[in-house]
Length: 149
Image (cartoon, rainbow, N blue to C red; front, side, top):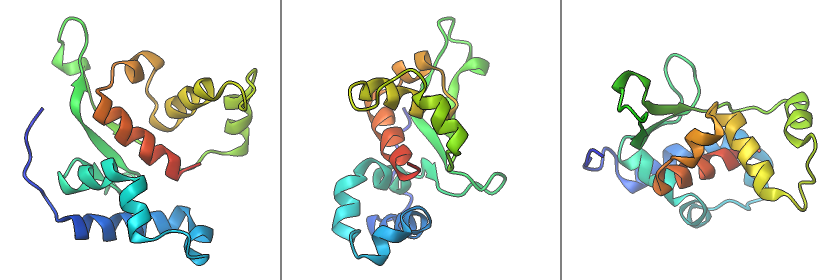
């Protein structure tokens, strides 16, 4: 892992994420349910990733969030070309995708299975790749994925 000095301040990161969050949580913002304190409490890893320059909320080429893993997922042979270094997020889950994600599971009793399927969907990572994520990377990805539900 590269040690980065803060690329931006917490205040700048918070404002940047708040503007991004408004696109996906319009109703909650209109009703005043999302405050700066709530964002800092609910999304601490995202704020840290923004501060460290590891998360771009709107990639110039795709317009989608791209997270650079703190600890890339390496292959067994340590082949650098095959390592997963970044994760690009899908920001929309279509109704047909939801049907596929929920197929064969009861989300009330099999939440972990649903969460795994959902993370695979929004990140395009395989289950084994998700299993091999560092805890901080997994937490950041999980927090960002909740924005798009």
